[in-house]
Image 1 (tube, rainbow, N blue to C red):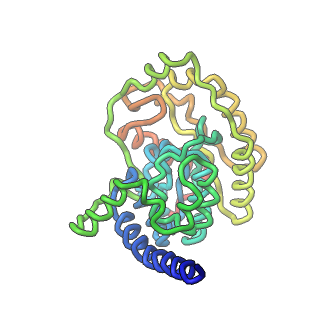
Image 2 (cartoon, rainbow, N blue to C red):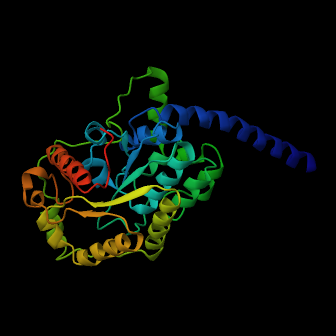
Image 3 (cartoon, helix red, strand yellow):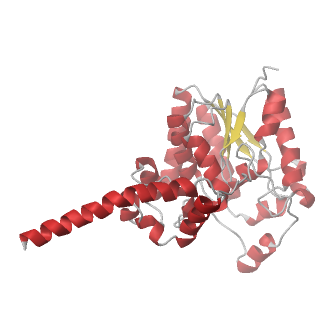
Length: 321
């Protein structure tokens, strides 16, 4: 019996030892693809120390699609990168922040795109596939994703386990390994504008409910406050920006004023700028949006130029040009 257990243990150890290099091969190939909505390109740049920008943009999909870092660089004279993460709130934005500082030079400025969802915590780990190539034994990813419904504990600690339920990711990795496709990133310095026309998201939402009321998360509020304190200690200037939302969508959110007031209080407490574009004329023009929350590419370019002018005129960012 003792011999049986010894042989079984040796077999298990052998399987684990073989699983690690196979895990590395799958992950290495997968992260070169546009799988997971193109998030790998941004994560790769973070982990490979390729950001190193003087201006970084944080936020959700509204940051990702509203603020063009290439325009910021051209008109402000500072290198810039957009770290907006689709479908997530500040919990995951903070994960990107601490990972950025670990592998890259600290930025001079953080343009923090905030909105009604920034301080709400969702239950499901949206687009969980984006973490697959990086999450094995990664303490930061474990700390900031394990509270969601997405992965089980073994996924973080044992090789290949997390790929068992992600066959599409494995297939994508194999295709990359065999065909060596020249995958072109959909993003430029993290930014991705969409040439979409107005859709029915808002009208569909109104049919389901009279109003939307977001539930603010106490832990997220505390984390955001901690983040602002940390940036002050590191001499990183944070600029809060509420990018445009279509005016009818603003009316649909019942507690919108409460959220805006919260960010105004953060601005006052930490003595940082807060640029709120909620009442800007662009918010009344449907042709610049593809839904109530997101500008299309034309609207994003218009807004980015507007933001640049405001940053210059208010001496928030003093251009070296």
